[in-house]
Image (cartoon, rainbow, N blue to C red; front, side, top):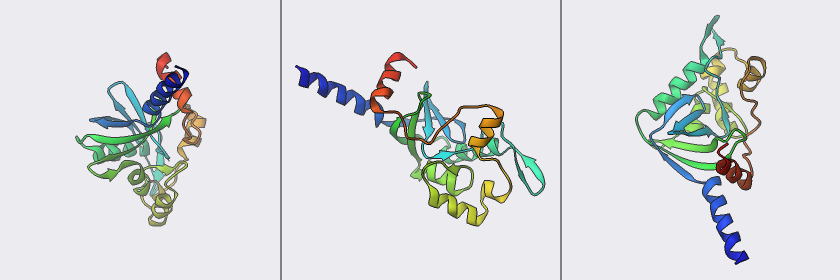
Length: 173
């Protein structure tokens, strides 16, 4: 009986921690999606916040809005296919996603619309070298901008343990 109970718990942990998630999503910002009430955070990247402003060619521009718009263009009206890799401390699924075969996480960093945040270092090096997106001007790292202007205090995306993810889901947090 104990073995059967442990097997059930392990199965539930795997379901919540590494679930495949797919469907038509809404782009929330440059690194977040929504699938119905489920919130998805693109793992390993950090995009400017919607209200964040950056500077290029002597002018300020809405780099956060631009990042969200770029991600919206990548997704289009296609369904996305995501692989869950845990849940962050805010209850969002940490995911790596594709739309139409395009790796959204990597493409956001490679295009310069997001920075590497624990992953995608090579894509960031390439974007910097080409002065793509954010790298064409001046900007505060999104994490630094949030610290000054308010926003979620995010650490690198290690995700919660599977047990913590299940407990948060079951408690409705």
